[in-house]
Image 1 (cartoon, rainbow, N blue to C red):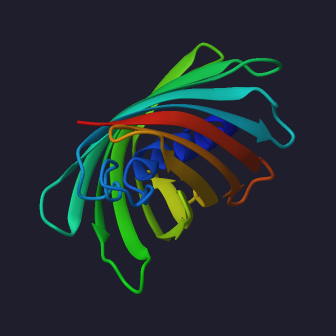
Image 2 (cartoon, rainbow, N blue to C red):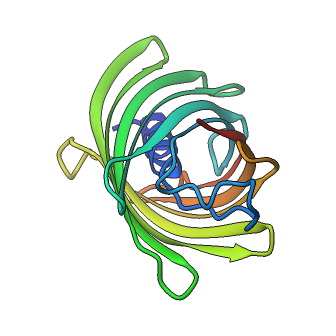
Length: 210
């Protein structure tokens, strides 16, 4: 398993799980009461500062979320990632996830499971693989903002010797500017197992409720 795929795998699963994270907007009569249990779309841009490989890995992400019960949301998304600089590569990732969430003492713990498929092109070689991931976290309302710390694990379906295993720690802040529109920003760290190619991850984007 090449190092580029390890990085783009983490991007794809993070994009899928981020679409399901609980966000708590300002408590007013005109803003949505949280994100979980709501229908919304999300557009985001991400950047990764990768140790020992390239400081220029970027991603464009599009996803949507919808409730199926009062405690379960499902989401689906697409992510395009690319590297510029000393390593040239790009990837396309389709993913889906389900999130179970509850309200407890003013916060919202949640757990997410994700599946997807990724196509990678690097150095003139193309390959693809199924991917999966899981995440746990909690939404914490802070005034008109919410903070959502989480920890995720990402892997593919290759043999353990060749598979990509990554632990992703992330914190995201969300704010609703109106009844339908929110902005978010996140920072995280990806620890790619059995490899020195770890990275700091940064994301910004917009959510629109419908």
